[in-house]
Picture 1 (cartoon, rainbow, N blue to C red):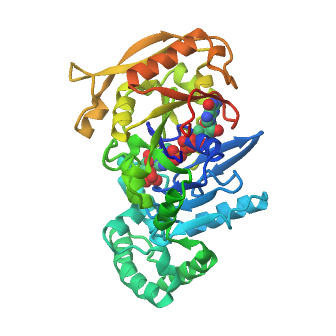
Picture 2: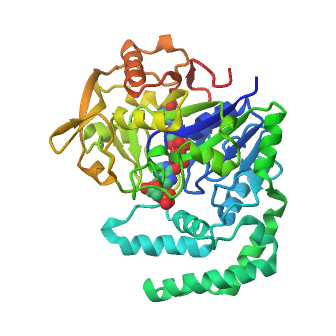
Picture 3: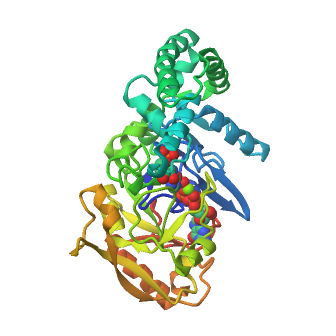
Length: 430
Ligand code: GDP
Ligand code: IMO
Ligand code: MG
């Protein structure tokens, strides 16, 4: 039976979604991005060769897979061009198989500029965004003044929309942020030029997905960022500007809830976060440094060091419920090799009270003190193991504890960055 699978990160991003999307793409006809933009950095390693994708779906390295960018994605055409050129240079066709929704809001040069000047103005209260213009582009979408992909193919329509938008943004840039305003005709020319380069990719993604579904084809929905970066359910305001949780699939691709048969939650065996914001289990000691070093925890998009800490089962359990996760893929288990003991957060203390749920009010997040269950570590090397029984007993017990404390079955385990380094207990498509 055909199946559609959604792959979502259950933490603060960088859980290893790209690797798993690439692996499962072998079994699908289409891979769809439905939210976020080129703030994402999804890393694929195939026989030692590393590919980092930001905007193009991680199915692109599997031949014959249709790759789609849904209406929920904010689209930077210059970033897309750079990414396509990089793939084409390596002999990967990223032109014929890529289709983009006509309704995608475009990230314009002014969005990136606003992102930068606003973060600078916030000083110590900065969100720590990726500086890609993501938030400002979503703001224009919601305020109904955004430029959509289809607009780029109609010069007069675009010119009149841009006149109005730039009138507003240039006023804010000049008067409020005190930076140089943008030249409308330069913005227009750039946008028209880039739009023309990609006009052949314009498509009705929602309609195409319905066709594929009706024809009994398998589809993969590729989440970007992590659930705790969700604009509604995350650690607001330290979040991204899209719905990274399950609802984003329907609104960002144009499918019904019946189009998702299985939700694979990607959970790192510990936790990382890039940028500002609360992180109750964050470590500032040698254990955190060891995770960062063994896990090579450097942001795939911005090159910033990722903050590291223990697995938070309370936070993860919440996101398993929010997303209706069917099964988990626990990634980077091998990074924990050699730790004498491991900790999993099972509750918090807030104002002296023990709580076993996340706080309702996002501001309280910063005051949480984690309460841990301590488990024994293992000294053996687990890198590349593909059979659960080959894992040290303590690694198996650690996985069992994650499943029990987070409240979901583990269907896959990733034991290295390579496409082949996995333990598969149940394929989502079986
Ligand atoms: P994404 O944003 O969720 O796709 O994750 P990223 O690609 O940003 O970050 C995950 C990083 O961990 C990448 O460098 C991957 O190559 C790497 N990785 C993924 N799975 C594993 C694993 O099981 N073990 C190790 N050691 N590295 C992994
Ligand atoms: P992937 O798909 C980790 C974080 C930024 C910042 C916040 C808002 O690789 O998991 P934005 O530029 O989106 O307005 O920044 O969100 N962030 C990510 N962190 N992985 C990502 O994507 C991220 N995309 C955005 O660091 O804290
Ligand atoms: Mg990433």
